[in-house]
Length: 229
Image (cartoon, rainbow, N blue to C red; front, side, top):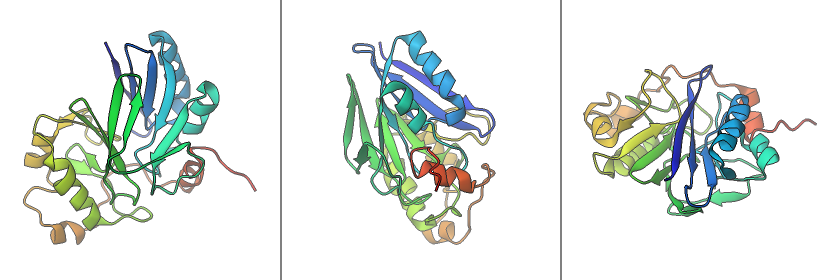
């Protein structure tokens, strides 16, 4: 049986996800936070898993990624969206790509708007939506390269096209909830319900997420490693 864990960084409300192949013991983690590196390593050991991939849904602005530290500790490879502006990754992911980890296979979806390089992952009826689609909300549109109209298209035309029962696992928690579904978000997310593309794009969205941290952006452009001159 495959392993699946949702993990939360309390200071930022950021969620990360560990998925492990029950057949091969190979594992991947999505959107890890550097402060939680010991937790990820401990959990991998507890479950008898070997980390093979670290995946990023976008260039995070509110916390430093654990991608580089996990790569150093485990030898895992780092994969990011091709348009994230993240350097030093081992693989660049494009819309429609598939990433395999043992018997686990994730489909890559381009879902830009919150940032130009946002991607989501689809696996076994689950969508890992990063900051593109949050539970009852969405990513802010005041980050570098944000484009509200593009974000609207990514959510309404791309993610909302999935079946109602598809589970939504975001990269952030605003209201304390851990999981939603496409049907619920399509029917009740107030930012999109009966809202036109032009109406959505006309109002900047700053939705209570942690502040943008310049040091996080600097580090995350290098997979979570600060480059000193």
